[in-house]
Length: 91
Image (cartoon, rainbow, N blue to C red; front, side, top):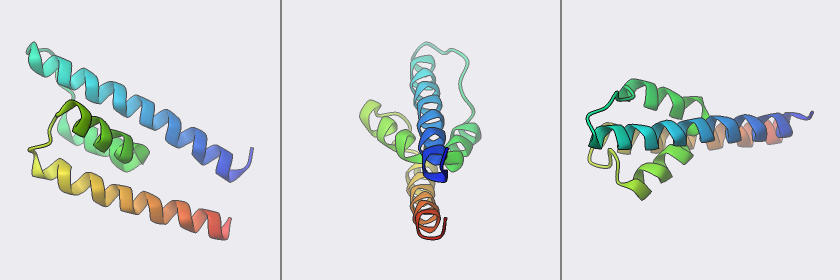
């Protein structure tokens, strides 16, 4: 498996996990269920799920009024883009 294939698989898996937890948090917020801690959601974004999380949050209108999420997730997306470009250029 090449580095590109590995990172494609990694970003796919972390994105799916992040989307599932984000949607679960939204559903639980409506019925006062067990919530996913905000720091954990942001950590998942940092680990590679930021783009999927940002899109999901916009689509389901979850945490879009939290400045922390609307500033940190785009910053994490930029970091991921830089990392991917560096890997493609130098790997």
